[in-house]
Length: 128
Image 1 (tube, one colour):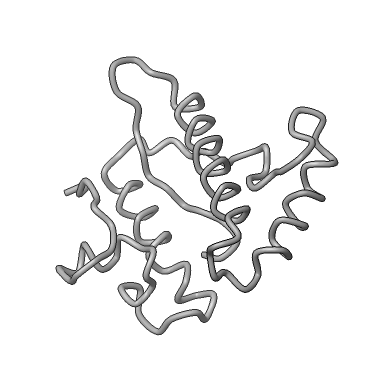
Image 2 (spheres, rainbow, N blue to C red; image 1 turned 135 degrees about the vertical axis):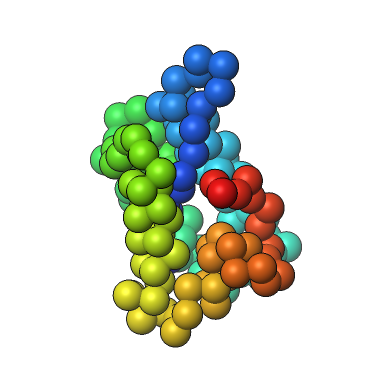
Protein backbone atom coordinates (compact mmCIF):
# COMPACT_ATOMS: atom_id res chain seq x y z
CA UNK A 1 0.00 0.00 0.00
CA UNK A 2 1.32 3.47 -0.69
CA UNK A 3 0.83 4.74 2.86
CA UNK A 4 1.19 1.75 5.17
CA UNK A 5 2.63 -1.73 5.54
CA UNK A 6 1.15 -5.04 6.59
CA UNK A 7 3.59 -7.67 7.78
CA UNK A 8 3.33 -11.13 9.25
CA UNK A 9 6.45 -11.82 11.24
CA UNK A 10 7.72 -13.67 14.27
CA UNK A 11 10.62 -13.38 16.67
CA UNK A 12 13.06 -16.21 17.26
CA UNK A 13 15.25 -17.09 20.22
CA UNK A 14 13.11 -15.20 22.73
CA UNK A 15 13.61 -11.84 21.01
CA UNK A 16 11.01 -9.15 21.55
CA UNK A 17 8.96 -8.45 18.40
CA UNK A 18 8.62 -4.77 19.35
CA UNK A 19 12.42 -4.42 19.20
CA UNK A 20 12.43 -6.02 15.75
CA UNK A 21 9.76 -3.61 14.51
CA UNK A 22 11.63 -0.67 16.03
CA UNK A 23 14.86 -1.72 14.32
CA UNK A 24 13.05 -2.29 11.00
CA UNK A 25 11.53 1.20 11.14
CA UNK A 26 14.86 2.77 12.04
CA UNK A 27 16.80 0.95 9.31
CA UNK A 28 14.26 1.67 6.56
CA UNK A 29 13.88 5.31 7.63
CA UNK A 30 17.65 5.91 7.53
CA UNK A 31 18.00 4.19 4.14
CA UNK A 32 15.06 6.04 2.58
CA UNK A 33 16.34 9.36 3.90
CA UNK A 34 19.79 8.66 2.39
CA UNK A 35 18.15 7.75 -0.91
CA UNK A 36 16.04 10.91 -0.97
CA UNK A 37 19.01 13.12 -0.08
CA UNK A 38 21.05 11.69 -2.96
CA UNK A 39 20.90 14.32 -5.68
CA UNK A 40 21.79 11.70 -8.31
CA UNK A 41 18.49 9.83 -7.99
CA UNK A 42 15.69 10.60 -10.40
CA UNK A 43 12.78 10.47 -7.94
CA UNK A 44 10.60 13.37 -9.08
CA UNK A 45 8.96 13.74 -5.65
CA UNK A 46 12.26 13.82 -3.76
CA UNK A 47 12.05 17.41 -2.46
CA UNK A 48 8.37 17.08 -1.62
CA UNK A 49 8.92 13.86 0.34
CA UNK A 50 11.87 15.32 2.27
CA UNK A 51 9.66 18.30 3.16
CA UNK A 52 6.73 16.14 4.31
CA UNK A 53 8.93 13.81 6.39
CA UNK A 54 10.73 16.85 7.81
CA UNK A 55 7.45 18.41 8.90
CA UNK A 56 6.39 15.13 10.52
CA UNK A 57 9.65 15.04 12.47
CA UNK A 58 9.10 18.53 13.92
CA UNK A 59 6.15 17.21 15.94
CA UNK A 60 8.18 14.38 17.45
CA UNK A 61 10.58 15.36 20.24
CA UNK A 62 12.57 12.14 19.76
CA UNK A 63 12.98 12.66 16.04
CA UNK A 64 13.11 16.33 15.08
CA UNK A 65 14.52 16.20 11.54
CA UNK A 66 12.85 13.34 9.69
CA UNK A 67 9.99 10.97 10.44
CA UNK A 68 8.92 8.34 7.96
CA UNK A 69 6.91 5.97 10.17
CA UNK A 70 4.21 6.70 12.70
CA UNK A 71 5.23 5.92 16.26
CA UNK A 72 2.51 3.38 16.83
CA UNK A 73 1.78 0.03 15.23
CA UNK A 74 -1.17 -2.31 15.51
CA UNK A 75 0.05 -5.83 16.29
CA UNK A 76 -2.39 -8.71 16.20
CA UNK A 77 -1.55 -12.05 17.80
CA UNK A 78 -1.85 -14.87 15.27
CA UNK A 79 -2.80 -17.69 17.59
CA UNK A 80 -4.12 -20.29 15.15
CA UNK A 81 -3.67 -21.46 11.58
CA UNK A 82 -7.15 -20.14 10.72
CA UNK A 83 -6.31 -16.66 12.02
CA UNK A 84 -3.02 -16.67 10.08
CA UNK A 85 -4.86 -17.62 6.87
CA UNK A 86 -7.47 -14.93 7.45
CA UNK A 87 -4.85 -12.21 8.04
CA UNK A 88 -2.78 -13.25 5.02
CA UNK A 89 -5.92 -13.12 2.86
CA UNK A 90 -6.72 -9.67 4.28
CA UNK A 91 -3.19 -8.46 3.46
CA UNK A 92 -3.30 -9.87 -0.07
CA UNK A 93 -6.73 -8.37 -0.77
CA UNK A 94 -5.94 -4.92 0.65
CA UNK A 95 -4.70 -3.34 -2.64
CA UNK A 96 -7.65 -4.92 -4.48
CA UNK A 97 -10.17 -3.45 -2.02
CA UNK A 98 -8.42 -0.08 -2.35
CA UNK A 99 -8.85 -0.23 -6.13
CA UNK A 100 -5.14 -0.25 -7.01
CA UNK A 101 -5.17 -3.63 -8.77
CA UNK A 102 -7.72 -6.14 -10.02
CA UNK A 103 -5.98 -9.20 -8.59
CA UNK A 104 -3.83 -9.53 -5.44
CA UNK A 105 -0.84 -10.95 -7.31
CA UNK A 106 -0.70 -7.79 -9.46
CA UNK A 107 0.41 -5.68 -6.48
CA UNK A 108 4.18 -5.47 -6.89
CA UNK A 109 5.00 -5.36 -3.17
CA UNK A 110 2.87 -8.30 -2.10
CA UNK A 111 3.60 -11.91 -1.35
CA UNK A 112 0.39 -12.81 -3.22
CA UNK A 113 2.42 -13.48 -6.38
CA UNK A 114 4.69 -15.82 -4.42
CA UNK A 115 1.70 -17.79 -3.16
CA UNK A 116 0.25 -17.88 -6.68
CA UNK A 117 3.50 -19.43 -7.96
CA UNK A 118 4.37 -16.38 -10.04
CA UNK A 119 7.56 -14.36 -10.36
CA UNK A 120 8.04 -11.92 -7.49
CA UNK A 121 10.44 -9.18 -6.46
CA UNK A 122 10.44 -10.51 -2.89
CA UNK A 123 11.78 -13.55 -1.16
CA UNK A 124 9.46 -14.83 1.52
CA UNK A 125 9.21 -17.62 4.04
CA UNK A 126 5.98 -19.39 3.21
CA UNK A 127 3.55 -19.89 6.06
CA UNK A 128 2.41 -23.23 4.58
